[in-house]
Image (cartoon, rainbow, N blue to C red; front, side, top):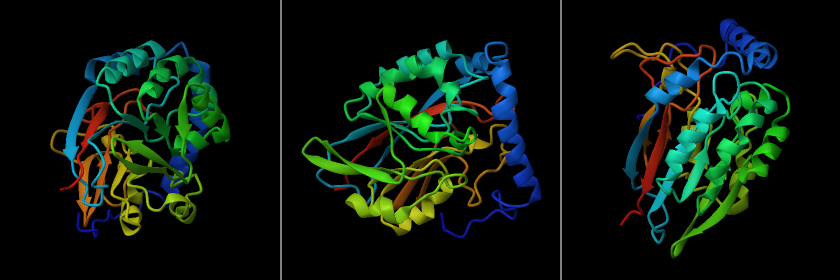
Length: 292
């Protein structure tokens, strides 16, 4: 990326965008819960179209004494109306057979309320078996229900730790790296000063919104992992995403700017419509190799 890519319409502001967000919150909180267990149209599509993307990278500022690291990136699971726990359980089980060293879940684990998680916690529990643990950062949907703390508690009960403007130092092989997570860009309270002051800039950052990328690069973050965009959720062949969530055109895939890298997953779940087209659900397995 050049750092100058911009969309003409700001996806965060404007009358129609604010109206869309408020409608999304109302529907997710007050309508969808009444349809739980009655309407799960997305689960059959997920079972058929889910795929695993794989990438091997060597971030320039990654610790040189760190052993190879296998990171499983999941995002936008959106437990609740569209997702049957048994389908999620099968996918998680198959992904953990890949034996990742660490699991990163980049936000939006619910559709509208913390209670969306209740039936899916057993399906998510195997993620915590990764040797370096399973880690989470908040997304915008995690704030729709007004109780992100309840989401953190539910995830903690199955061994998944939330990083909210926090970082941890993880030992791996003969080296170590810093893993951080920043709060949601839209509805959260991101605090870069708090995040960076703890252990220094994270080598690996969980940031639900990919538009954190340039701020992360400016602070020396080697690799940022994001979701949020769903890859547009619906895309016509060779066309742009219909729903454009990134102001900087960071819709899906891998990006480089100066010495920093970004990986944006299309995510696992669906919102708004129980459907995806041209932007199928995915997880990403990332192999990180220290630079020579």
